[in-house]
Image 1 (cartoon, rainbow, N blue to C red):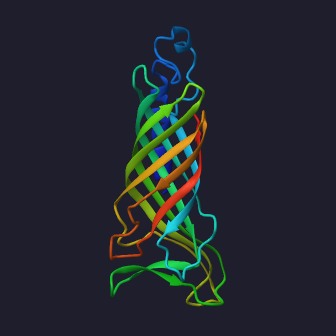
Image 2 (image 1 turned 30 degrees about the horizontal axis):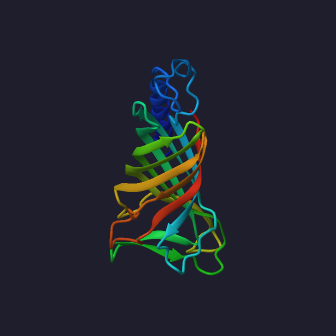
Image 3 (image 1 turned 120 degrees about the vertical axis):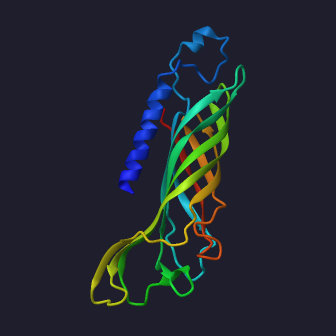
Length: 238
């Protein structure tokens, strides 16, 4: 996953350099304002980072999970500004990362061919039990910018599920006297692709971010029907 993530970040950086090489034009004025057009572009939303907490929907009631499941999204987006209008269309590439801390292991039941949550037995102590969800996506969004700096955007992403895994560190559930430390990458029956919708609203480079993914993490009837809903802040880095 680390190599995949570094590769995607490098691609985003290269895309950003390509975008930065284009003729600058401020998003808050029309092309008729020649003096303003010559100013450097500061808040063009070319590289965006979203930092958020994820609410996991449809979790089994018997599974306890932490109150804070952090994650992030990084997107490099090309801005297609509509002439003489405060609106634009954004298209680019991005990566999203989600976490889920709980007290249950995700395992594949071979007899039923189902992915299931298995609660840790009482008395088993652990330090880390975390699920990781990582995807690569293509965002398409509608953008509005007011000359005073207020802006909002709504969009959708279609992407490829690169990884669903779970990391465990603690007592061995089978032999509590021993310790175990591993990362399970064999998450069977996961979906290959995902779709989500999102929105940002704020001022200049700081925004409130909301995202909802209706696509479940696992194939229907082949695993828990869980999906993420996220809320956080968004920073327009360039």
